[in-house]
Length: 183
Image (cartoon, rainbow, N blue to C red):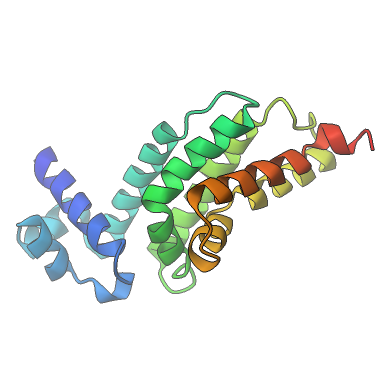
């Protein structure tokens, strides 16, 4: 039963990384997974339930893949790029659908929360203790590490991975609140 469930989630994720959510039917997913539509419904209740399960699975995988030592900007950026190079295009495609698909909006809200928690962990050495200064610093770090910035550099501007990583490292270094406080 778990193998079937995993196969259906893998099939749905593969389809949704290439096509719009609305363009993928339960029949497409069932065919890709080698099961019946009824099997998909029995396991997930429908397309939205499946989308929630796929999003949860992706979120847990992202958490594992983004291991980086606190304060090591190069390692943090490298871990982030490993994730974005594998999943960034799909993330951008899903994010473009937030306003139309409630399951994607829920998944995106969850992913934003996870990304913020990750930022708080890996940049713990440079974030102010609390209050408006901490929120400001977190917002800057969030913007500097957002998937859309990766997309801008890698897809829209055509930067090499090396150049895009360097740009993100430079941006993160420039917004270090410890440096700005002394200026």
